[in-house]
Image (cartoon, rainbow, N blue to C red; front, side):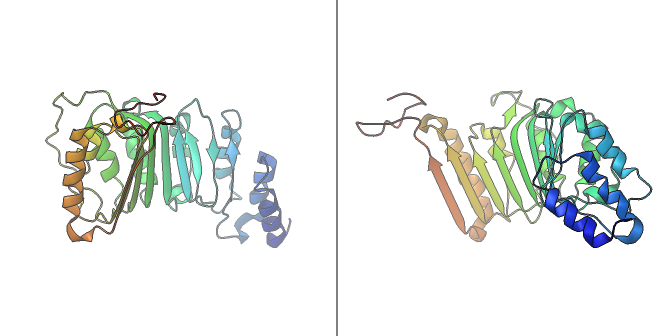
Length: 272
């Protein structure tokens, strides 16, 4: 059996390379001597995921934990762990129960990318909330919801959440359709930072009102015409809900092209 110190050195040395399951299996050599075994970086594709999860089932492994997880769709079949990071494709949702609870309980940063939220069963959604209950930073990018109630329920399901980053969030319903649920979801009490990128649907903003704990608010738009008057009104109510707690406000509109004769406030991407 290799000494624990040597195993740690080997794992640290290999974490920047494309890891193989043979390298990961070194964790098993340490047996019960180590109370936990953090993996700095693990990258798996659809074909190698099963042997990786078999690692958790080894009787020689006492514990292994990750701190940052990213959930992605099948088009990005990647599991990546970097210090506090693990990236799982939507196909990983089916095998999450194979991970011991203590493997994911340290996750603090969770990224969800390219997922239609309604495609997950209620049991799968519940499994995510239970296993990532200590998440403090949540990032959603290209996530599609059927209704704003689904979005509210997801954000509210992380009680320790402090930082929320949203980019290109979509709803199946239009802004004119009435889908308000009678279920009220209260935002996490410690949510102090909200960052929005390319968010043009007012439903997203309204779902975050009120946010009395908000201190930092940033938003970014690619084109001037993406920022509609309705959004301005909803931004106002969101900031007002923070009261005197608000400390930092940032607003950026990125011109979509080069403007030689001044800036056209009604310009779209590619227009000059």
